[in-house]
Length: 162
Length: 288
Image (cartoon, rainbow over all chains, first blue to last red; front, top):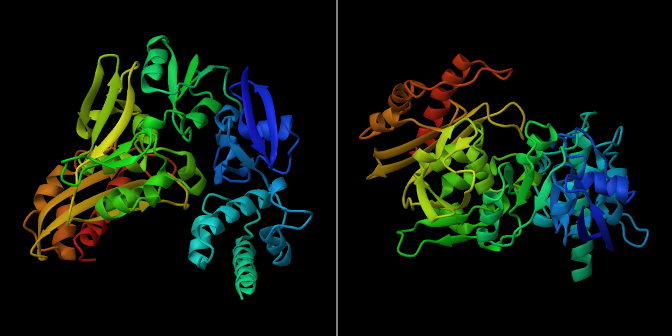
């Protein structure tokens, strides 16, 4: 067993884990954070995407021990004070989900994309989401939702500045 | 899928890592893990010891080589997204930048590293052919100190490189190519996929009209990345019209041994190589 100490969704956690434990298993099975799902289990579909020290990663392709000392944010940690994150709001508003299984990963990857590029073009959104698969093929509304969130965020920011 | 159990060590220096590797008969080095973890989870390999080099700060970073005429050294543990963010590499090593941009997807590029990819030596990896085409040098640390291996001696066979069991790839050096044009042409069925094949071309023009030098690397056209030297030579002195370049590139698959799989058989790949090579060279020559 290896001792790990990390921050998950703002809370400090300390655990002894087997080195072979995957980060996604640690999140789901040890911390009960089942909002992060396992889709393909082969690092293809992106459903398990979380942020590790501010960057999106596929948590089925990271060992829990590699996250030692890091800050992890999951889909369960992005709403603040009961207010949905702008992307969660946008996905609801634009009906950007059908079965909903890819949604946690789509939102976490979209958040990463918007952090790097707050005003992406449609092509940039599609490229930014290339590592996330929607089994319902509902990409149109997912792309719309990311645009919606980008516009909503910049409207708020512009309003604040004025 | 869960990897078989292994011992785990996380050294903080190259010497410590080398000591761990020397002390085990069955160790694997874990860089960013974007290839190795899949291998371990599918239980294609089950090493006794995994040496995680993710906390060795000295292995990370992009620096100009002093007195190297624009040469750039990239630490083996530098993740793809840091390479992509580097202005130095975007302007000075455009071919590498463009190939790295094609690796996997954003999540993979956040974790995956240049050194990890080269040491893993998957023939479908985007970086190998580019390292070869650009004449990169691999800096390898071992019990007796460091040695430098040119890219064309580095890739030895499928998933096999010059890095010994008790050695560690620590950095990759790229010569400068001021004034050269380049293009990485990759063919995939889905955006995030491994290339069915890819061609990286780097071209220097004389007086903007004729090709004075060309370097071409092939991805997934054999068990290792390949240089298309005969085509490189045929291009010298050529005015890069579609016809002339196409004719020269018709020989690009000569002597290669591409795999056959569900994405295409070897003959299809050979054909694809001629098409992508023509496109890559024309674009690199500014004639596309």
